[in-house]
Length: 80
Length: 80
Image 1 (spheres, rainbow over the protein chains, first blue to last red):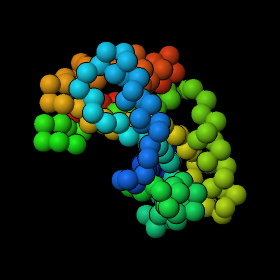
Image 2: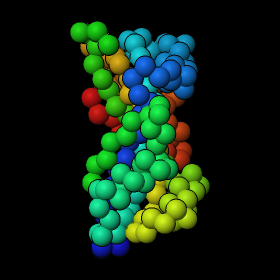
Image 3: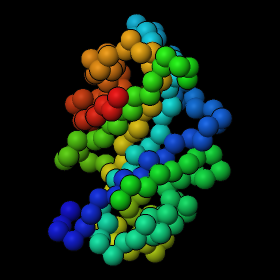
Image 4: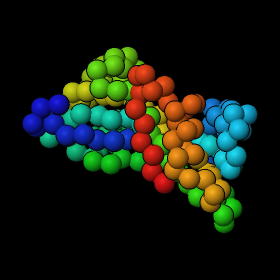
């Protein structure tokens, strides 16, 4: 990352109501390992982009809509 | 999620210096799709846990060390 780039974080999670088998597997594994008190697990993606200073939030929104998230089943949040 | 549970977020990223082929594939795909100005991409996991109020940060640290992260190549951060 050079001086004229900055970090953008995109978090992508399955929408509420969409079954999350990966999260469910983690929840089950934690229970099997003896960790009590974990009632639910959802697993998503965290994507960190190093972008040049000319990149706008609407550029990142377009990246999310076209590639980073499947907006039928996933929601995303951009922090920049 | 009931009244006596709370959300804990765990982010797991590959350590600096560990090759991230998934992130590299995303970076390449964005370039192919015409998005300029993306110089680097790292992809990690975001795990949201619904835990009961008795769960401490050290419990979550143990979950990370034993299951959620591979600490040889990944680092994690807990927000609770």
